Image 1 (cartoon, helix red, strand yellow):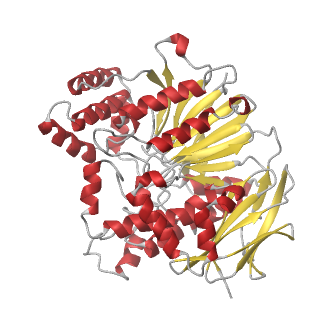
Image 2: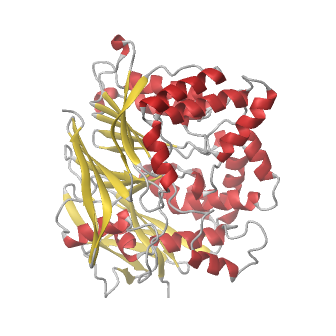
Length: 547
């Protein structure tokens, strides 16, 4: 009899349809029943000995909560009979409803039950606990996870023990994951956490990868990539990382219509074992990144979310470095400027922040100029060493791309049909802050309010050096130092100025945007432990962005 190994995850949801993702123990037919009535079925497909299904659910009534159950070959498997959680539901909006979008990045798996958590309470666990306590209360309409959903290069003690039982950790890549099977273990460790499992079954989610989903500083530079390709273990790591991302994260980002039109999804489901066609795609994505698009668009009424791949889509040639390849840039521009009259709020999801503390921005732009040869070959070698050692690879490290995004944000936020807000949502940097740009030429300032909203980590460590560095990076002294550094590298100054209007905040946290018509409110909540009681989310900031 087929068993449910992982999931269900409620991924896509709109006013009448949804998709539910599951992993099963054997081939079977997965079914989702809504209120006891058949809602959709899908036959599992196989990848590397694992079995998955993404079940399309149709015919839902707008403006309702639809409790659902999952059956495998007509046998109920979800919810478990002894579940302490409320029923999993598919909540369908009606046109004009407010949209609550919670976001963050960087989540280590929670510590096993009964063990102390070295990095404090998990923000997703505490969000789940709050919804369980008040199932009819406020909850996100969608959860946006902006990278580092799993850590392939920083494994837990439990995972290291599991790895050691299957291979010698003295051989590279040591205690990091090496292949597809080991990636599946990371997802089990992360998503089988009871609270997180239930949360992901009842709140739709959008996901995009960042570096740790593959390896720290993934695609930092051309020389970095050449060094990795020279190792004996890298090829299997990158192919397994891309394959597992497609299965566990990317498929669920797509609408039912996009899934039906996806040739790879069709090919994988048409054969007994879809490993080879998926591996072929991963090989193609690794060899020719511009041929595969991981970015995608989701519309929530009049709220548009563009999730942008800032890792695999990079151009790494030192003289033509770009955060996005030309095709990806065109796609982002087309989606951002598409039918502006239909969009009240434009959200650009990018795992890496666009606007950083001024000292950090200037250091990255300076380093990019050095690596390009602005001060000669000796400085270029130093710049590459510094780039890798200090993780200087955000938007600021791709100056032309930084300017292009700046121009696009201004254009999308201008004109008579401009949205009320254009917000860049990011994570990665293990703290949270709000930054707001200004255009020196007031006549070119966009009508929309433009903000960088950064929220990280959901559950991870925040070293003291990071706290000090990012606090100092916004100071006047740091700004002067950054200007001097930029001058040494002969790097051009950015087209805009910006200031920090909130933060920095440190801790395990989530931001929530509530978008209602043309109004927008932002709330930051942190997971706080309480003596002798479960952790709770505590509001540390709430503000009206359109006041």
